[in-house]
Length: 399
Image 1 (cartoon, rainbow, N blue to C red):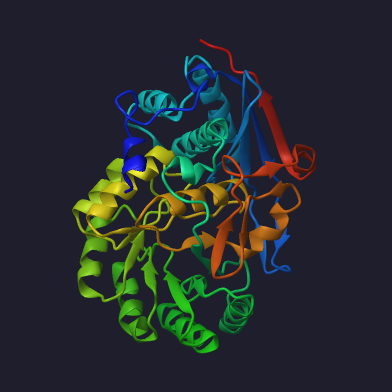
Image 2 (image 1 turned 180 degrees about the vertical axis):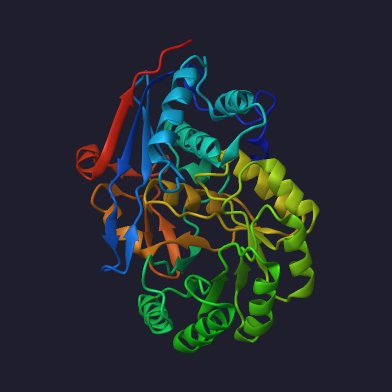
């Protein structure tokens, strides 16, 4: 990790100076929106509901955050957001460090993914405010450079279209859109032998010049993933993701020792203690905690530093709206030395344009940050509200 980003992990003892006025920032309002499902990618996939929030300070500075939420939990997690916002309003300094300490105390070592998603989003919004006060893009505040082209890959995801022919056509279409890396989920609606055929057919469709990632979607049986791994290695997957549940660190470690493919894990997991256990077991080549579910940007920076010492990469997971969380993902990738390709959901890009200017553009091979201050995201709240099924605003009060 770059020295400046490392110093960000400590607070009062850091040589790095916070922007003028940060210590006096007090939270005044928290608002949440849950977007309605939408069709994306010309009908290829349904875009899930996304949960976005805006934090406004007593000085009128607004910061945006987004949560990694799973189905049927959106409103419940929004309630966690507003409860945390009320407590955070009592902070004399609404800095990311103070909020992180507060959240860890509240969690009392029982975080869970939903709570970690809530803290991720609120801390993300505080970093947006923090960087706006510094009048810099967030990655520059973290020691990176917003001018850095950031490698990306396209995740091929659909709720219904999983036959081999459709996947091969979709992969070819994305390559035609200049994506130089694509990811498939061959086990969805397929047996293990069929999954091998999926990988073969997609590789044939995209050719040897495009990276191919394989996501096994956390199989219950390690032997299923081992069967597939042994038969697809000749098709040169760039990585082999979530072969088993990320909690099964022992199984991940065993598989890593027997395959030449790079093992990726972490999208459903949160908290530094879990990822430290993965690193201690030498169970993965790349970690992919969700940028909006890990627990916060400070946790992501600390994890990146520890992973880098073991030559383990970080590829933030981002099954989110391709607006706020995607911008945060890219700023993190621009700030850490061991960033792998960033995750893009092509189907999710168009729906986001209905309410957001994202602060980045994707040319297929790379994403490019705009250089705007903070996350660089601008949201039309009127348009967002029209596209949302649920809106809630609260004015946090101390105590």
